[in-house]
Image 1: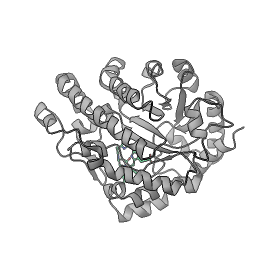
Image 2 (image 1 turned 60 degrees about the vertical axis):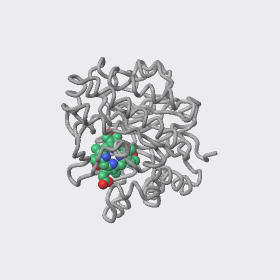
Image 3 (image 1 turned 45 degrees about the horizontal axis):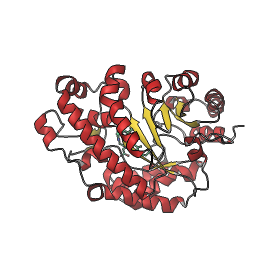
Image 4 (image 1 turned 60 degrees about the horizontal axis):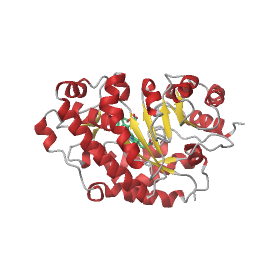
Length: 340
Ligand code: CP3
């Protein structure tokens, strides 16, 4: 149905003339047309207004022609729907004034009706599908239960999420109940997103790499696996675990369609750990987009050579940084399109 189906073919493991390319956090802060909208509307207004969310989603596609769009939204709309207050503070980032630190706090956390609380996301998906006009597929996303717990317990971003870990290790029953509530909500949420029109879903485990390999299985992967199993018959699922190279072998045993990898692992080792069982996505160091365009092009070509053109989706190893010049983004995308 979509005209450019490179991304969907790569997710199915089918052979392609060249790999597809998109960039994590591509709808955002490095784009002048985004900054213009940001000046007029606050963050959650942008998320809740379908005309704004859809416009921001297609901005990078219009300018650079990525092979997939990712819906403009945020992973923190899920805890918000679960009755946890979330603000986006200028200069601070996410701010949760009433963090979850006890059984009593947990009792106020609900598993919401998705249409009632997150219907605006479904409306944004429908508006975006119309704007995209079936040119490229649309990706929907959610945070992993562990990454959402990190914000719910810590109350804000952190270098080590010490309070989140403290809850897991001192009150594990509370942590597991919270993780299960987030998992149940996320499954229902992603199923609605697929019904509303997204062509694939990605789970962002941005803080999985904070955990030891053993704790990762207990507090993160176990729950991601529930989401994969619940969604696999609805749409392809991509799991991105930042810093989670140690878990790749286990992750590849699941029914996931693709695994995201960051730049701390070589393409060769990532293939070895996953035994070529799944499509891999990544893993250009976002800071490397500060290199001159000619060098970016060389590095991208080498990255594709190393991963191989099949079962591969070109991407960064984490979100694009706000200070990346537009010409450098263009060099990254063009290098993939010129690959032969
Ligand atoms: O990828 C895209 O372009 C789609 C939109 C998207 C946003 N957030 C928009 C956003 C996506 C996929 C996310 C995911 C997200 N949000 C993650 C996982 C990916 C990652 O980067 O690890 C996380 C951890 C969050 C939580 C979050 N939201 C943080 C830490 C911040 C503040 C720091 C920052 O990145 O600027 C946000 C705010 C946010 N989400 C912004 C955008 C464009 C910037 C604030 C603004 O525009 O006012």
